[in-house]
Amino acid sequence: MRVREFAVDLRTPLSTAAGDIERREGFLVAVDVAGETGVGEATPLPGWTESLADCRDALAGLAEDDATGDADPESALEDGALADAPAARHAVSLAVADARARAAGRPLAAALDTDPHTSLPVNATLGDDGPGATVEAAEAAVASGYDCLKLKVGARDPTDDAARLRAVREAVGPDVALRADANAAWDRWTADRFLDSVEELALDLDYLEQPLPADELDGHAVLRRLHDTPIALDESLSAVPAERAIASNAADVLVCKPMALGGPDRVRDLAARARDAGVDVVVTTTIDAVVARLGALHVAASLPGDRAHGLATASLLDSDLAADPAPVRDGRMRVPDAPGLGIDVDAVFP
Image 1 (tube, one colour):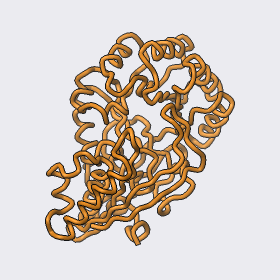
Image 2 (cartoon, rainbow, N blue to C red):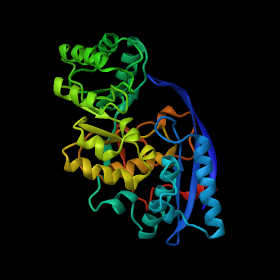
Image 3 (cartoon, helix red, strand yellow):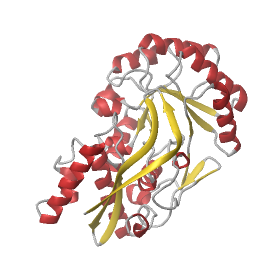
Image 4 (cartoon, helix red, strand yellow):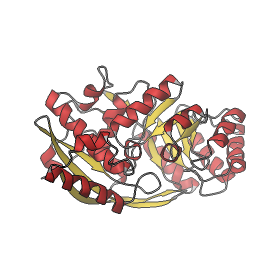
C-alpha cells in the first residue's frame, strides 16, 4: 500500500451556507490486489468526514501495518480499523474495488452491477451568489447542455433565496429541473418560510436538500408532511445511522457522498436499503479530484434510476491530478469502458 499527498485549488471559492470552499487537500492510495494495482482517493471535508490530520494518521497507520505484515488493506475494510475515518476508508475501498475490476477486465460499474448505465445526467452546481450572477451562471449552464441545476441557498433571508430561484426559473424556463441546497442552515420556521415562498411562486423544485441541522430528522419529516416540495438529506447521513434516516420518513431523496459514507460498497448498501423503502438516491462528490470523481461516477452508474447526479464538479477545480476520461458533455457524463476506474494508474501515482 502506498500513499501520496496532494492539494488542488478551486478556480473561485464556492460559496455555501457553511462557508466558502477554496482548496481541497487529500491523499491518493495505491494497493495491490489480485495481481493488479488499484487507486483510491481520500479528500476529507470536515463536517462530512474526519479532519485532514486524522485522515493522514489513519492511512499512515494502515500503511505501516501493511508493510510489517500485521494487516492488509482489505481486512481493514472489514475489521473496523477505519470506522472513524470515512475518507480514509473510501480511499482504501475504492482502490480495492478498482484493482479487482481491473483484474476481471471490466469497468468498475460493470463489476458492481451486471447492467450499469453507460452515461448519466448530472446537475450543474451554482454557488450562493447574488441574483444577477446566479442567473448568468444558470443561463451559461443550460446553454452548455445541463437540464438540472443545483443552487446553494441558506446564507440570506429565505424570501431573497426564493426570489433568486424565481429569477433563475424565469430565465431558464419550466423544463430545467431546479434543486436548492441549504447545507443545514435553517431552523424549521425559516425552512417553512422558504418552502411557502417557492410553492406560492410555483417554482416546482426537484427537491430541497438538507434545510435543517443534520440530527433533526423529525423536523425534516414534518416539512415533508406540510409541503409538496420533496426533501433530500445529505449531512444527516454523516450524523445519524443510515437505518434511522430511512426509517424516520424524513426524506424523499438521499444524497450519498461516497467520500463521506466511507466508500463505494457502503453507498451501494445504503442505496439498496433506500430503494426498498421507496427513497431515491442521488450520488454526489465532495468536490474531489479525478480519482474520487470517477469512483462516484461508476457507483452512480451501477444504481437504478434516472435522476441527475451531482458529479459535475471538475470544472470547479483550477487543476487536477490527471486528465479526466469522463468530462461533462451536454449535461451528461459517459462512464469509461476501460477496466477499473478507467484511468492510468501511473498518471496519478507515478
